[in-house]
Length: 419
Image (tube, rainbow, N blue to C red; front, side, top):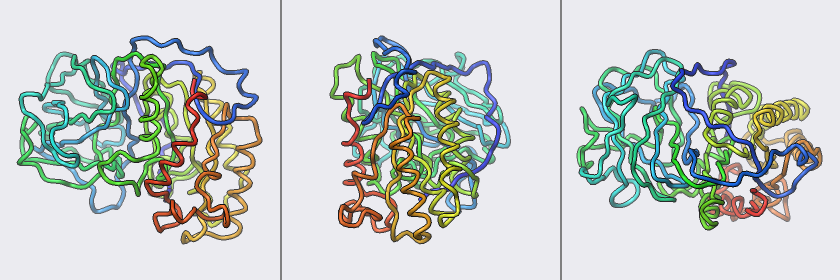
């Protein structure tokens, strides 16, 4: 399920970097005594808000990692909220050399999901400081000029990025749950017939902001469960996707952008060579620097327990939770704590790990550190055997919920508590 990577310093950012941090009120099931620290509610308005995001990591030893030269990457992003204009966020935070971008286009998806097809006449060029090209410095992120194009709620946007020079080490998100394609040369306006699939990893793209009437955005921060690694490919069935669908049924000014900052193998504490920096190290980039964030839902820690076979002490995890909540509150962002889901039957499960999980969950439910709590454990566990996932929700690895389990997690979020 989960593990992290290290990196103790926040990535460098240029003066170009757009930041819209907001104050809060949002999520979930059980408000706590931290409620008296909440910022005033947001009245809505036409502002920039995060609509889609992906957490990135340096590449590890996995053989499927690609590097690119004189090729075009085509990636599909599924927007939560739409708006009358948008901007892309490119990333080279884990690169080892400047990333030269030769051309970028965006277009609505055409045809079935899981295909690279677009209508060439619908491909809109994207510029950076008025130019069609950009060079993203090593360790940096880069934001495009606003693209004046109406994009719908709950829609797919096809992003094509031409990379003329050798890219070197990419910034990558392994479990994109959406097929990625590549074509030779500059194929940014190609209808798609010359593209081939290269798996589900995402490269060099970590966000899309839109200008819309919303109440802000919510970040779902976690590991492979939030990443939805066993959800159906190209179907947008991760639990944050299902929450986004529910939110879109509310009146426009009450919508929320939904940003998935799940990172497969991530941990709270350590870098184990997989899963990117630990949560404490990536918190600024993946939460505090997102656009319009009001609330974060925090579901992390099961990897620390599982992969240590119960040797991590609950107090160590609690210390990280407290740090993350304090940093979020300083930025005016509300934090919803989520209980850790069962994992009996997983390779490193033992009684000590289960005792640690229960201790952490009791603290999450009872500590009053969080602004609210959502009890995912209670939703997906087997009522007759609470140490394990309910069979109807188990993908077979005894850690990751299936589509039905992820939908059950999404349903426990009380939308009336999000504001």
